[in-house]
Image (tube, rainbow, N blue to C red):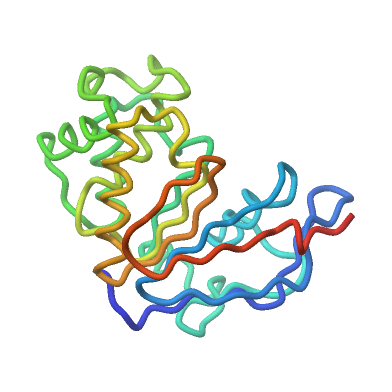
Length: 216
């Protein structure tokens, strides 16, 4: 599913939360095989930027483009090209942990068996709760259910991850870093936030400090 010709462009983006403008005139580009670490203090707009990148919000000014086309014009076609993992995790309470993983994969057009979903959950330390309904899981476990999708291949080209290493033990962190490295090696793209610096071996790895763009 990954292709080297994919291209994400952020063009002169401005974003506000309530009456406060978070950042303005923000621009960068991302191509196949590249990872971008979004840095900045709390409140600088990292989560807001990720939500703009996946089309869950609209900027004050500027636009996000996928292969040169504004994402608002692509809609579902663009959403099939990405995985977004935010703080909430996008987990359905009425489904079991493994059913959530399978459903997330199916929405991206990729078949996922029960055994494959169980294996993905095991990679983030959730094999013991794979059959439990999501409503019975802790917030940390729910976050890991969302991240288990990353253990399934093939992945969509673009990964947008908000604090993906939170609530993971060290073996799970290593497994996740391995999955991200493989994704970049195959020409995928990654934009992520973290307060826990995790070195990724593969790809061209840049940093973008939102503190330099934050409006005071």
